[in-house]
Image (cartoon, rainbow, N blue to C red):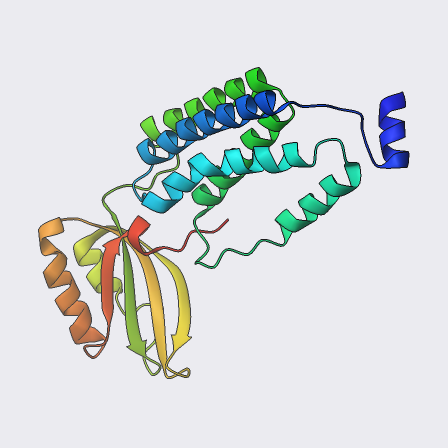
Length: 230
């Protein structure tokens, strides 16, 4: 407690970490990052090569940065603020990708404070959870479900325009969302459905095109079309 109060008042803590110890911490962070990266590749359908490599490097960088400012309370706060200002010059990833980023950064931080056993235990525990969820397909949508997006003119009533076609070709259908496009002159309707017979998909789309004036119709797997929310 006396050390903590002294750190808060003076801004420093009397600690000493040799280069050898720092290298051991960094190597451990890298090895655990490799396990995280392998888990990312084995438990997902959409894999980014660069992101998988980044998951190995990120724990090392976080660990080394925190070791560099070790013992200086004010500098640690400044580094924390710098992390919060980072902006990635790419499209935002899925919630799964963001979760793995926080996972890697957490392991890097735990390694930096010298808790290597805790870091290894936490890594194995979280990776095991990912594998269990992947094997049991937790919260995964049915492979038979499809996402249907249909564009119709504004003069058509979208509430029941395709009801007879859905009854004929689908065993399940649900209206997900409706939005206006083309300066409000058209509607884009998003449905979630399950076809009775996959071989009838073309006939189903053809009849929809006849109904919506041959405007855009998109039918595909749910995970390929839906935007993921975090």
